[in-house]
Length: 82
Image (cartoon, rainbow, N blue to C red):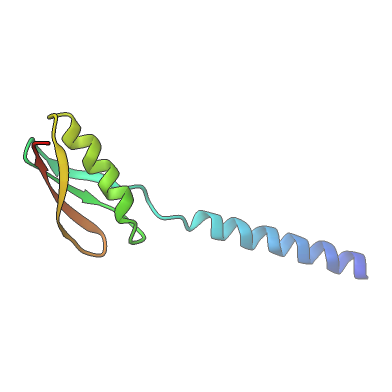
């Protein structure tokens, strides 16, 4: 009986682990932008991921992102000359 309980417990832990792994935050996503600005959606309060997206976007115009405003899931950046 202990063997069957051990297997059931291990299986339960595997299922719980799979569920928790599926609960990851979504990647940051450029919502809109041009040479002067970028609006980025991000999850989990991870402003660093939003900044990385804005940096890639602004780099297309040889500019750098400057954070203007951030809330829980959206950040607005200005793309400024270095």
